[in-house]
Amino acid sequence: MRRCLVALGYTCHTPPELFGTRIESLGAADTEWLGRIAGTGWVVLNRDAKIMERPDELVAYRSAKVHMFYLPGEATRDQLLHLVESNLADIVTLSADRTPDVWKITHHGVERFVVRKRGR
Image (tube, rainbow, N blue to C red; front, side, top):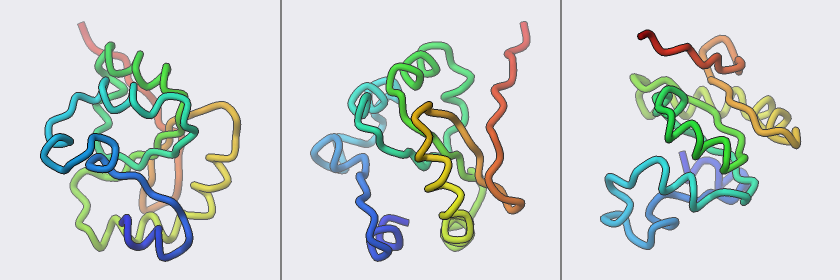
């Protein structure tokens, strides 16, 4: 994914870059990396939708003020590349909005991500 986006002229940041090494990035808490990117204006491509369900991670996301796009967790590398490439114009357009939001990228296009209420 990174190589594809860089080849198209985009700047991409990866967890190893954010934490210094791949080893240091492995297992980093979502609250930690979200805290590190707060205020950067970056667009996050992610597969861990649980961030929107865990209270401390949801707070960290809201504090980070970044646009987040979820990709299907079960998708293969080739499927992920296809989804991003075919929806890149929408991703860029939605990311230009000043108010950060959460989206999911599906085979039907980019859709607003709806946070489900947790059961009791």
